[in-house]
Each structure stands twice: as structure tokens, then as C-alpha cells.
Image (cartoon, rainbow, N blue to C red):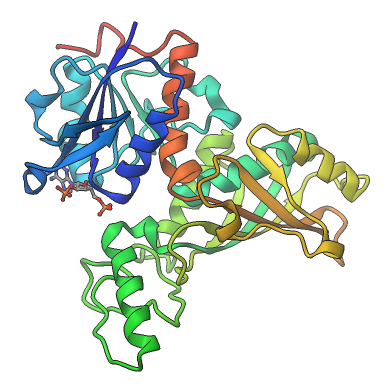
Length: 353
Ligand code: A2P
């Protein structure tokens, strides 16, 4: 069977990456249906040599769609994802709208593909920073057990959408010319205070929660616990926006239940893990950077060190393309995994109620 596949948010930074991932996917695709807001009417997107018209995302537009990948913000997902499922489309949603709901699997295929088994039509794609961290930590969890994670992120502006990428380019140009500018997009477009991202770093991604952590930081806590099925796992995150267009980096300190026998043992566990590439050679100054891993599907790990004081604590540097593994590829990989398992269909009880 070949599928009709919709991409909701097709004109956005992640939507465009989703279409690129579908182009190189093994999924049999009969037709691509790119969707966006009414503002995009008249636009087209290129797919496998054809120019495909963008249609407005409405409930009716999902009739006859088998699979819908959503990346148009939480509001759009809340309004339209259940409508798509009702019309028989399996939805992989990249927003945070449904991630923590009990009956919604939150999936990184290398880590917890088994969670797809009893899906009800809607599957959530985790937050980009969470995805790359759990891919790198899953093999260590398996071999030694995880007790506590402390992570600081260095997140690219593309995670905040196309406007944020444009803002970095614009501000950087003005800054280099010695010209002034008014920051308009970051840290959060809908909040009143803005900071420049050119020549700057901003220790705020998303809104603050009453506990003093940001929503992005709490996503890393709650989503990591859900994906690992360990609600007691301790996670402390500091999420920071840096002037990079694509590619998130993370400094991760992980306290293991059991001290690894050697660091070679840790490297071996990482090398054997699906979706992980180890680049770690201080003598050759070899380690991943965002620019080096752009466009790649894997998660890259370097700077692997044992803590100086605690033998069961390990430090890692984890880098991935936030638009690819952090969003588009993980979503398409979920769809491919569903297809392989014969699960790319909405269970009878969920469609057309
Ligand atoms: P549009 O281009 O028509 O506004 P980004 O995260 O890069 O800013 O992209 C957001 C994506 O979500 C765009 O494709 C945008 O389409 C889409 N989008 C925003 N609001 C809606 C909406 N209400 N309905 C459908 N798509 C939307």
C-alpha cells in the first residue's frame, strides 16, 4: 500500500525538513499533501521533482489522508490533530500539546519503539533537546543504570522557527556593520522583553514556570522520565539559545547506578548503540560541532570523560541536527517504524466516532 501523507506546517523550518526526510524515506508515498495556514495559499513545495500546491489546513483537508506529520505549533495541533485522527489519519505530532498525555506514546524509535504498540492514532514526537539526549544516554542506562542527569544546552535558533533564523541573520549583519537594530523575536516572540541573539547567548527558551525553570527545561525533565519509563529519574536542565542557525549541542553530566569498569567500556556501549556516532579523540581535536553534523540523522557524542571525583559520573558532549533527528527524521522514523510493525493505521475505535 502507498500512503497519502500530509505535512502540516509545510512552509516552516521543520515542515521543510520533514518533506526532505519524506523524499529520502523508505515509506511508500502515493501523494504528498503540504498544508499550512491560509496565508500560504498559492505557494508550492518541491517534492520528488514536482511542484505540489500548499493547501490550507482544515478538518476536511484530512479526508483520505493516511499519515499526517504536524509541525505548526501547539494550537494548530490541538485544533486539528484529533480531527485528522477522526478522519482516519495516523498523526505524528511535533508540538508539545499531547506529549505528556497518558494514552499518547512519546517515541524515539532507537529508545522506546515498543511504546508504539497500542497507539490510538496520535503519536508525539519529543522535544528536540530531549531526543538527542535520550539517544545518547539509552545505552548507558542499559549497561549501568541512570540515577541523575545534569544537562546544559546550546540550542540553535531554528528550533524557534523560521523567523528566529531570519532574526539571527539580520541582527548579525547589522552588528557586523556596526549598525543598531531592535530585537524582535527571541527569547519568546509572544513575550514583551526581547534580547539580541547576534553576539549573545540567552538563558531562556520558552516561558518560565513557577518553579523558576523554563518550560523547555521542564520538557527535558518530564519527557525524559516518560521515554525511559522512570518517573523518579532526576533531571536538571539549563536551556540556552546560542547564535547558531542549525544544530543543538549539550553538555551532559550523568550519574550512573554502577561505575563503569573503564571509559573504553563506556565508548564501546555508545559505539554499539543505534543512532549514535562517537567522535572522540583529543589528540586529533576530534569532537562533534553543530556545523560538522548538519543534515545528519545520527546523534554525535564526544568529549567522553570520567568525573575527577566520582567514578560513577561521566561527562559527555552531545550534538545533533535539531531539524533532522530533533524533529523531522524522528517523526518520519516513527512513521517508518509503524509501517514495519504493521501499525500505520488508526485503530477502529478511534476513527469516525
Ligand atoms: P504559514 O507559513 O502559512 O504561516 P515556523 O515554525 O518555521 O515558524 O513554521 C510554522 C509553520 O506552521 C508554517 O508552515 C506555518 O504556515 C504553519 N502554521 C502556523 N499557523 C498555522 C495555522 N493556524 N494553521 C496551519 N498552519 C499554520
